[in-house]
Length: 266
Image (tube, rainbow, N blue to C red; front, side):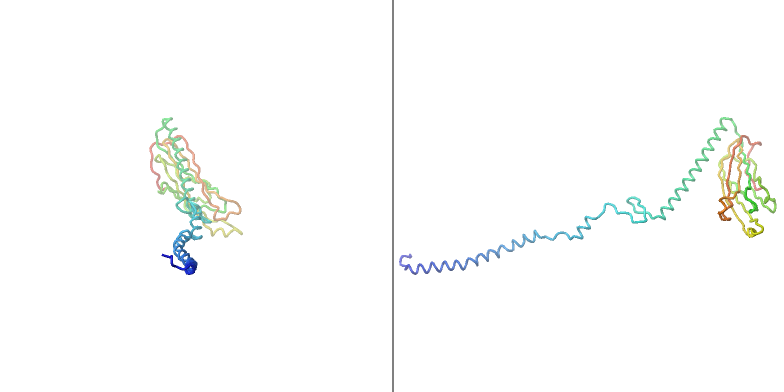
């Protein structure tokens, strides 16, 4: 169909087509790039997803397995912490319980030993208690009154006005039969300051000492309890802290008379 087309026209047509191709090539390339851009943007968005913020990552990495106890507190495991005051209170309570347990053990050992001895010797009788107050205080303290309780009941009361105990060094309080078993002796001792000369101010001082002692009365045995008033401390001890009481006990075989009765007020 191009037989009659002059060669010059053919050349011009070919040239125009070539020029058109050159003009369209950048446009086609631009369109292709435009179509590819969203896909690339999506890929870029996917690959550039924001990482966790540094504070959050740091917080997650720094969570400790177990929080450390703050200064001034004592750790108590996973349940929390205990302050120093609470720890001291609990420690004192534990020490008190330990001391009470020691006293119970001592009394149990004494009771078992004496019961074993009584059983082996075939003694079956009442028990007896002898209670004596011994005054070891200096002349700066004058004994004014002694009150003794046996298992909470009055046992004996001695006063200087009635019994002249101020100058006595040994004062019997009780010497009778008692029911076998565990008992408690409580005492209240009162002193009056007895100064003269430059120490005359002591006459205005009054002192009270309270104490108690648990003991075991054994069948066929006499327990001798001595209540001793003495001055504790040294020259630098305040005078109001000097009066004190201690106890001693001793068991002897035999009770004298048979039978037992509860102590009465003397």
